[in-house]
Image (cartoon, rainbow, N blue to C red):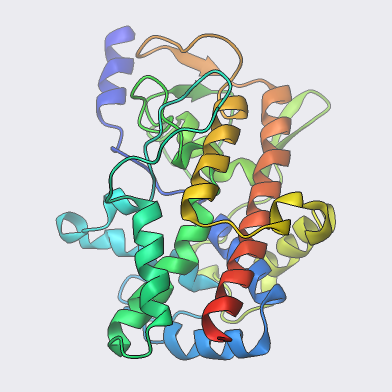
Length: 303
């Protein structure tokens, strides 16, 4: 049994995407709802030109554009951005501030994308790509395990879990702590049971415009539960490094179940209490990412 588990562990990818596609679309819907009209218009001009070969040939809109960087993993070995979705900051017991490692990583790439979008002389295709990245990075950078690494566990990818039934995973591959956090906003506990609140839309079910469908409805629920005014973090601007250190602190303090790190191959069964707490943290992080993304777009396109 142990050998089989270790074999499954060896098959795990080096890193997963941050929030699943539904999570990224939630971030972008919240940003759309809080961005200025000018920022929306300027962003729309760019996102419709994103490479859409892995989006069933349909043009991206502002909401679905947050999925673009992960969709482009369809390039396989030609995908060049795998290391730009996260930053590896070692876990500490309290999550005290830690230095940002040398690039390349999400912090450096976020700065590069922002600079490109601010440069009116930058080539149009580079600006299109930069916006696609920006719409994705704000989501990635707020996922607790995209800035936290405990005992070289690749942001929780090496921590096998049980107790959560993922409706969108057909096999046990991917049942790890990182994948759980990618989807934690869709899970909670009721009457002592872990439940999935809603299923992520399939590729063909993605919204065709902002404000449409299940994503928009769930975004409204998150904003209602976590209004902008409840975030003291928004009182001062935060660059990528500051957000990464904030996310690292959350990851260290809350992303791992209580207790010592398990040995390789051991399966952790998540408790309803842990899942419920994770749901609250994840929805709050998604809301914060959306508010910050809206502010970033306003700063870029309204200057």
